[in-house]
Length: 574
Image (cartoon, rainbow, N blue to C red; front, side):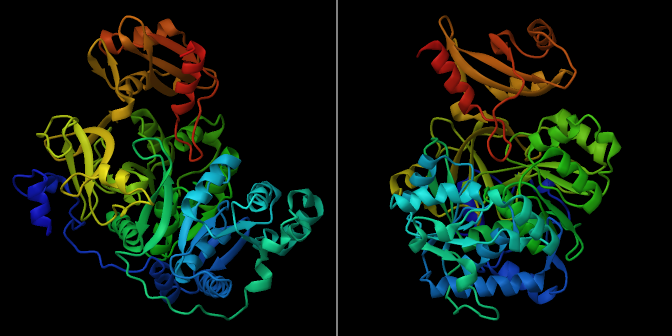
């Protein structure tokens, strides 16, 4: 099916609805060549071998050095049995080790399976068993190893390759770490499962190269990215080499003002998350940029690093931007090196966008996507007018069609609410070993159903109203929590807010708002209600308002409603 047929099938009467506002220097129609995902690192190494690729805790590695380490690691993986289709887990914090083994797995023919280091034992065991991981890559840090060791002991995980953390540090820092923080280093050789452990230094040989593996980019899997999808049940989104390569290329084309070999990316978002995997690591490598890597987010360390390392690009989530804004002495730091911030993972409150742009003097654009789309599907233009509160327009070669909430095969008219459905080269092949769920998540004409509700305006720009499953139905009226959240964010005292639906004896459901106030600010429930009365309807007014010192968040920093819903269910005994 060609693009014209797809457009027709999606209900577009004449061309692309967003054509009138599409960036002049971005060609939506330009094809994206199917290539193996590891070609990103090969291209950068060939063109810019002497430029710095990673800067980690004071030690830098050039693209040439990273390229050599990728080849050596890929060769070692093949020697220990990794072949085409082998699932290999990455259980790592942000580090050069993640970058090296991500591409080494792909070159060896394997499939990357990302794991969250903060997962519980049960969550790890489920994902290992569901994905069929044969080998886990990790570091010799107690915080990591103590979670991997029992999985091996129980027979859930067959084996693990353990790399050295101190080898990532400058010589002086490494010596000091061994001296003063030795308790944080694991002793894999003394483990009860040492027979199923592979020490990196024993298998990685300098100057080696992997045997070439034939890759069909559009068919062969590169990444299994676990997600709750629209149902909340963990499942692996099957992302092909082309899916992830194409999405990286789409993002690069979307920011033509960024120069190859000249940018510096701040790598603070966790690489195991699909947003950071593509928009931090892969995007930076596509631009041959320096990746300034932080192993984890620490607010003051991040602010200081922006001042000293002077990144030009900072992919972020709204809570990260908000945290920087709320730091009491942020005005004492220079953040003006930043030229471009792309915000994703969660809706970007308009006040946060405006305040951060004023603070740092850079553009903050909101994008939208999900694990199933590798992840970026839409974004506001990197240069030119930005539609506040909008997720922008589709990326190159991407179609977005809004579908009827009851019949996902029926497109809705412009201006009507509909479920966001996506077609493009970045859309996953399906869910790992879940054919029925795969079928259910696609429309009959091949569009991925997202479970998100949006409208398209007269210019072809999209604005999310909410997730279908977050819909609150009160007295037969549909209420969208995001609309209430945006209204509450307009109160000067509010730092963060989450709205969920709670049981209501009279209305069936009613909104409840959980609010975190800005440091030093004061507001009562009565103040918030008075603020909302002229902004939202009575049916949308929160039935309850609860103030919290902190609101629950996911690992990547998105505000999470799951915990709040569970608390309410337990509290109400239902």
